[in-house]
Image 1 (cartoon, rainbow, N blue to C red):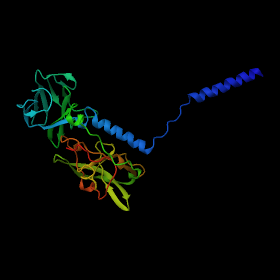
Image 2: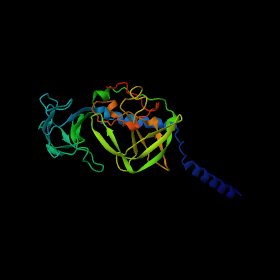
Image 3: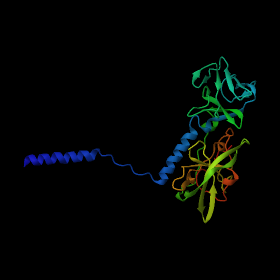
Image 4: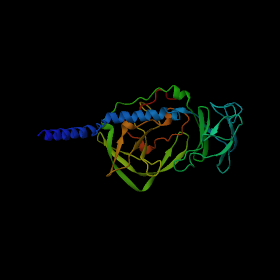
Length: 305
C-alpha cells in the first residue's frame, strides 16, 4: 500500500510539473492597446535618426556638373557637412556620377571611396536602396520625381528632429474602425495623384472602398505602392486645414477579404510634408476628399512649418 502511495505521489508530482511548464496564453490586447502600440511604432519611425524629421534639404540637380558642399561657392549649398564635399554629374541620359573631394572624409554606401555611380530611388530593384553618401551625422541619396533628380539630404542632428513637439491625436474611437465593402475594378482604373512639388502621377486603382456613416454613403480610392502591397489611401475631409493637416492624411489597409476591407481611421496619419518642407508628398485627389468630419487619427502638427 505504501508503494502505491509513493507511485501516486510521483504521478501527482509529474502532473504538477507538466502543468507548471505549460505556457500561459497571453491576454489578447484590447483595441485601445492595439492603437497605442500602432502609435508607438509610428512615433519611433518618425523620430528615428534617418526618419522624416531628419530632412534638411531637397536639392534639385541640373544637367552637367553640380558642386556640392556647405560653402557658399558651391552650386548646391548644404546645411551640414564639409565645405566642399564633391561633384555630382547628371548626364543627359539621366545617369549620375559622384567624385568626392580629397578631404571630404565622406563614405559611399558605408565604404571609403573617391568616386562612384549613383543609383537613384527610382532605379533600385528588390530590397536594394539608392546609393547613400554619408558625411558626419548627415547623408544624401538621389530621388527621381517625374524625371527630375534631387538630393534628399538628412541629418540626425536636424533642428526639426531635436525640437520635435510630438504628435497630437483625436481620442481613440472604435466607431471609426469601419468595415467597408470592397468593389474591385477589372481592369484597374487610372487615378491622377498630384504632389506638393507640382508633379502628377497616374496610378492604378484596384477597386474602391464603400462605407456608410451617419446615414450617408462614401467611397475611397486606394492604390498600391508596390505589387501585392497594402491598400494606400490619400485622403482629406472636413477637418483638413482646421484640426488636421490641410493637404492630406495617409491611411493603409490590409488587402480585402471576403469582399470587405477594414478602414481604421484611428490610424490616419500626417504625411512627411506636415513636418518638413523638404518632402515630396502626394495630395489627396478630388475623389478622396470626403464631405465628412473624420474626428480620428492624427491632428495638425503644432510645429507645422
